[in-house]
Structures are given as C-alpha cells and as structure tokens.
Image (cartoon, rainbow, N blue to C red; front, side, top):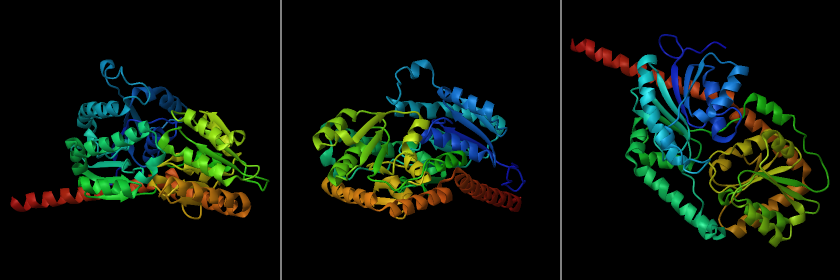
Length: 436
C-alpha cells in the first residue's frame, strides 16, 4: 500500500513510537503496541522503541510478514537496573526507568533521522510520564487510562489486603499527578487520547490542552475478526453457559458474577472461568459456600486458541470488572456474536452498547448481584435476545473497533498535527521576513 502524504511536501511522516509493551502474539497492552505500529506503518515510516524481551516474537512475525516501513529498536536497561523485575513485580518502576533511558537513545536517533512526530503508546497510564515528550517535535500521548476507580460502596466485598491495594493504587495515582515529569508530559502534549471520561477529567486537571476521547484503546484486526466470526454460533438449547475470562484478581469482580449466577439459579446452566491469579482460592471457596461447585468450572490459564474454543462453546460473557480501562476480552466476545454483561464502570461501559449487552449499575454488592442475576435469567429464557445482542455486538466491533478504523483515526490526527505545525512555521517565517 502506498503511504498517504500528510505534509505540504507530499511525503509520509517519519514517526517515533514508544511501546514498552509490544508483541504480536499477545492481547491487552502488548497487542495494542504491536497493532498500533502495524496500522500506522500503512501510512507512515514508523520506528518503534520496545523492550528486548519482545525481540523473538516480533522478529518471528516480521520474518513471516515483512514490513519495509516498520523499524523496531529493542532496548533494555542494564542488568543491574532490572534484576529485581519478575513478571508484574516492579513493572511500574521498570517502565518509569525505561522511559527515562530511551529518551537519550531517541534523542541521538532523532539527530540522524529527523522524526516529524513522537507518539507514546504503551503503557497507557496517564499518571506516568513519557520523557520522549522532551524531544523538539509534536508529541501524542495515549490512548491513556488509569483514572477509573472502584466505587467505595463496592469495597464492602474486599478483604483488608484488597482495600490496602486500592488505597495504595489511589495514592500512587495522586503522587503521579504531582510528578513534575508527568506535568511536563501533559504540558508538552499536542494531544492526549483516552477512552474513558474518568481519565479525561484527570487529564484536564493536569492541564492537557487537547483531549480526544475515542472508543477504546484496544481493537480487533481483520484476521482476528474472521477467526472470531468463525466460532460456533449460539444455538437454542436447554440451559445457558456463561464465561468469564481474565486474571483472577479482586478488581475483576468475578465474585460478583458468581454470586449473581448462584442467585439466578437457572436450571441446566454453567459458569466457566478461564484464567488464574491471586483470587483463585477465594473464588473456589465462594462457589462451595454458594453451593454451585457442580456447575462452575475453573480452566486456569489457557493458550489463545483454546480460550477462543471455549468462548465458542458459551452463550454470553460476564465481565464485572471494577476499574478496567479497555479490556480486549469484551471486544472479542462481541466479535464472536456473544452478549456481554458488565458493570456500568470504566472502559467496558463505553465498549458495550445497550443493544450489545447489559451494563449493570454499581451502587452496592447486593444490588449488583440482584440486577445481574435478573439479566442472566433474561438471557437464559430469551434466545432471540441473545441473537440480536450478538449481531449488534459484532456490528459494533466492525464499525468502531477494527484496527483499520483506528489507523484511519490516527492518520487523520497526525495530518491535523502536521498541518498545525506547518501553519506555525509559515507564521514564523512571515514574521521573520517582515522584520527584515
């Protein structure tokens, strides 16, 4: 595909991306980093900074599907600055230090390449800085999240450990907002992008001049859309099968889904849970307490192909997350023509329309349990409703959440920024000429 010319010289832009998380074989933020780079390379010459640990997956993908307009630079901190990082432990400090370190490498590269624009893609936390904003070129920040919080009325279900976690999360966010480098990132942003109103409000407090609210950070590419569309369609049968997919953490809210399932007490129904995490033992104890052990299955972590296989055997996704920013799993369920049950909080509330699923008000644990149970019973007894919602969800994903649509959005955004830059430069030249 020919690159689309964006500036007054008729050439594509040369764009620098910061993508700490960037892998073609992963979902969530790693998938965002990779898909964003791929889509932007349809229009521009793209250079991506990412971590060394992503090398094998990216080089394998590029060997199979080369992309001449995509250059990837693998960079990591010295061993003595990263020996303590294990999986998600210490990841935010590692991300902070990595962002600081790549600035010097990017500054040197900029002298050689002369980038037109720099874009920070992942991690998308509004309360963490991007030091690449210090480069003397327009800076795009996001998509961003992290401004979402659990309503205090739902803390009643939390253990002391979980309450401490949420308190520390809020404290870290507040500290981040006072970080001078975060303030500087906000000040230097040509535009900041988010998908939730909660984060948009925090960006306003930080003083960002232009904020774009778009429907979601994540997306579905054409290959994934076809793969999900080929899963078995829901059929009219006795009973119903619900599924939840994700890490078993307290803020994912799976305890609310299980309570609602037990309360609904639908004959011949099942609830499958795919994923693992710190709350596994507590959730196992909960299903014993609720008396639904024989109707709930825990599958643990599964590879993507098996996860999709099990999604294709279920009738609806239950995703009662308490502060998700932009979960891919909701889009995957909609792309597979499955209705989604979520809370009216954060990213899922934006992703899911009233035609594609149910957004449960989140005022108190008992209220959530009752309302979600009512929705489960309604879906179980109305097959045509499941079909209509499934069709509406797939249509919504195709129209709003395809990566090609996101690529077009950012292409137009870059075009606007490039035009603004040209206008400023023309004005400066005119002032200089008139003064001489």
